[in-house]
Length: 389
Image (cartoon, rainbow, N blue to C red; front, side):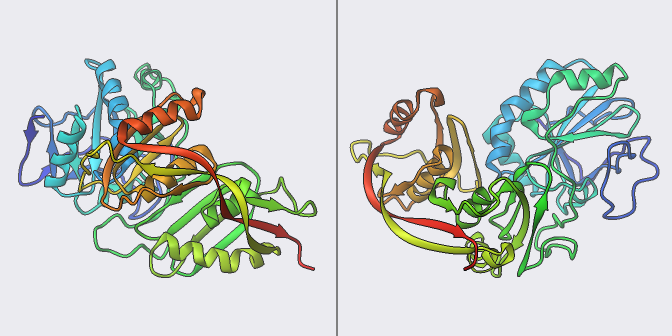
């Protein structure tokens, strides 16, 4: 990947003369904020943006979902090569981290360094990866996720038509500047807000750096499964409780850890919803993850990776332990998975299987890495939600 660097690379959309006020959340139809970057890697000379559709992907090296989206991102750029569209990936890490990310993932487009996070903030980036699309008129055409972005939507814009962009996260006020605390508009430590909502949404944010958990549109069982870090089948809901009501939640415990937030949720969420939570140990079937020592070497971990992705038939982590693999399998399968691997040194996971073939295909994929998955009975926590007596 060829690098184009200067002491400061500045370029702006020619129509962005009246950017929104600082920290204002951008909306579709707004003029796009000016783009100012410290470095641009992989650009063949200065980027020419005026009169073109500009597609910005916000990502970082520690984000597993960002790494997983690179092949799709590269394919889009190749498909639209030669047309009046510019693809720019944007990171708020330093130049060295950006160069490693580009080299490790094979990123084929320009990669801009937004070291102070000001562009992240100007576009209201709520989480990663995130995409903002700017039309040739300099106005924001929409927000989406990389996996949901298709060439057809870009061609709609190129033809002067509104783009069909789906799957974008709601914009948010938060600070992306390294070492700076989250703004007062973000979730403060000790916060727990839960209320009914009308539309299903799912987990919107689960941030290991801050301990922030945000979900929307979940029924009570699934809401508590997220809060307690278990699967919905581990929770029994009393028939007198509203099973179909959807809830949204925003929470952050003390200590900036997900464990701290979950401890707070366990202590406070039942009272907030007017229910009683009881937990008991029940002998139940579980999947036991073990290490096969005949496969001596595990894939080396990426020391710069701090995240991963879990999808149907696919688990990817730059660095994970045996316990983290078991947790990923539990989320992928929605069943109890117990770690008995003894693997505490991080290793890389890039595992795919045919989800339609169930455990058979999964066991084959695990065996290639040196793991086995057996079904056994173990005492497991079972939770019950009931009305107060």
